[in-house]
Amino acid sequence: MKEKQFHNYLNKIFSKDEKMLEMISELNSNGRIFIFGGTVRNFFENGKIFQMPRDVDIVFKSENGNKKNLENIVLKYFEFSKNRFNGLKIKSDELKIDIWNFEDTWAFSSGTVLPSTENFAFELSKTVFLNIDAAVYDFGEKKFYIEEFEKIKKTKTLDILIEKNPFIELNLLRGLILKKKYNLQFSKKMEKIFRKFISDNENYIQIFHSLFLLRYSDEKEEWKFIEEELKRF
Figure (spheres, rainbow, N blue to C red):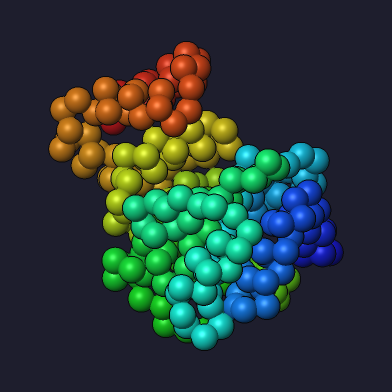
C-alpha cells in the first residue's frame, strides 16, 4: 500500500514537467532508478505528502554498465552542472534533482564500502553516515529499503553507519538538527565522533556556526540549541 502511494506521488511530481517525466521514463528503460534519502524519509515522517519536495536525490544504475549513459540521456532534456563527485545537478521550473551514477556514490568510489550483492538498493542503504538517511526506494521494483531507518522508531537513537565521510562537519551539524527535530538521543559512536572532532578543532563553535549560517538560516533559537549541545561535549 505504501509503495503504491509513494510511487504515485513520485509520478505526480515528475509529471509536473513533461521533460522531466520523459527523462525519468528513458532512464528507467535504460537502467535502474533509486530514490535516495530525504524524499523517502519525509514520506514516512508525514504518512502522506501534500506538497512538492525542495529537491529529489536519485541514483542511476546503467543497464549496460556505461556511466556515460546518464549524461547522454539527461542532456537530451536538461542542461546540468556537476558537483565534485561527478553528480549532475538539474533544475527545472518545478523541481531540483541531484542525480548520479551508482558507481559514483562516494562510499563506493572511495572504497569505503564494497558492494557484496547485486541488490543495488540494499547496498545503497549502507552508504550513508547517519542511520536516519538510510532510506532507499527502488523505482522499478516499487520497493522500499528502510531497515536501518526503521530501527530508529524503536531505539530513538541517531547512530552512524559508516564513520568515514568527506563532509564530516556538515553531517555532525545535521545530526544535531535531526536530534532536536525527532527528539532522538545520540549513540555512543556518535558521541565519540563529536568528541574527536571537537578535540581536533579548537574553533569548533565557529566552524559549526559558519556552516549553519551557510546551509540553513540565521534561526537564533535553533542555533542556541546547537551551541548548547556542542558545549555539552
